[in-house]
Picture (cartoon, one colour):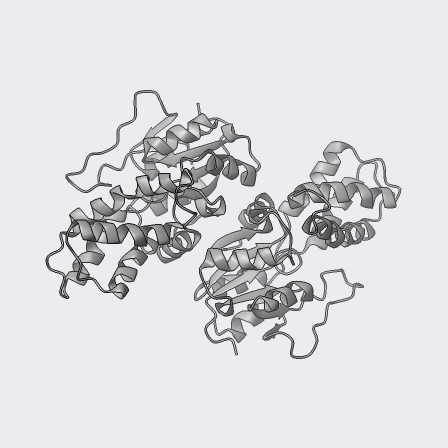
Amino acid sequence: MVAGVKALTCDVFGTVVDWRGGIVRAGNSLRQGALSSIDWERLADAWRQRYQPAMARVTRGELPWLPFDALQRLMLDEALAEQGATELTESEKAELTDVWAQLDPWPDSVSGLTRLRRQLIVCTLSNGSVRQLVGLSKRAAIPWDLILSVEMFRTYKPDPRVYRGAVEFLQCPPEEVMMVAAHVYDLRAARDHGFRTAFVARPLEWGPHGEAERPEPGEFDVLATDLEDLANQLQA
Amino acid sequence: MVAGVKALTCDVFGTVVDWRGGIVRAGNSLRQGALSSIDWERLADAWRQRYQPAMARVTRGELPWLPFDALQRLMLDEALAEQGATELTESEKAELTDVWAQLDPWPDSVSGLTRLRRQLIVCTLSNGSVRQLVGLSKRAAIPWDLILSVEMFRTYKPDPRVYRGAVEFLQCPPEEVMMVAAHVYDLRAARDHGFRTAFVARPLEWGPHGEAERPEPGEFDVLATDLEDLANQLQA
């Protein structure tokens, strides 16, 4: 079913790195200052929940192009205001936004991608900015062959231009490219462009009490429990 | 003089990999077929000499955007015709063009870039297509933090959009970025955009009898004999 795949395009936030754990840890370390009123788990979720609608506004042309860092800085203000948390300084907000460029990988990510990379071209295809993706990959030694960011197409997933653009850069027919993600919206869009698809379960993406995404039976080519399991299934 | 540099943007063909040696070797191995009349050294030089004018036509808008692979395929026909070499098949021409995605690094390239990467963001900024750059980097294990290709800007060096685009992706002021190249035209354009500059001498780029490029005294921040020497000078 996955014969002929030559390249993997991987979602990053949630699929390869743990955004929620990183934000909560960074927030809790700020809290040692004057910020004891903020529930960082709630804030992380509120912040992350805003990002799909904000990206959709960019994709529809209602907002001008802004890379993910700038968009997240705007959404942080909204998420903080929602919690009545107005006591953060500009530099604390910048520091918190920069956590997205310093997130830790899930425990299986580096080892799984390292195996996959032995026989496939392994690249990102992420809503993150180039700067964020380079920053977190370098910090955690995530071994990409290529970093592709939506910033190169000045739009966000699931805009068709992202998937078409990736295939154009790779110079592969889409059926030789497999999208790897923990999010069904992303995989469905990739599948609509002819990509192969691998769903990677990340039950802790939204924390221990969060709800995990569940694909419909049979809608994707591969269902993997993590990136090591994907390497097993692709015989890498 | 180079304090504050955070990222290196590296030219690839000639600076990091040896295009001429690769083409001559590939041509000579084809010659074992019916192609004994072709002087591959002359052909490599003729082919390479066409690429600056062809790219300039794209930059000026006289040719539509074509990635480097496609442009090189067109130029190969011209270079072959010039030598009266009409006996290559389409598949031999495709194979020869693909050599640009399989070139070997100079002996100091991987070790020098590995050292530089320990303390700097090290990326390509090349006229090569994304596919070529991924192909040759993966094959030779060249350790980039990021692959930037002119293909992302749909133009060629020294178009200002290339240098401005790189700085936008890196989210660095240009004085924190150092262009690394064996070619003065590229370094002069980068310098005009506020980049720091490192000239890397590649006396063998055009072969043992070729003429090496020589910068004017003092025009670039660093003159390096190779990429190991650049790592020494930047204390990496």
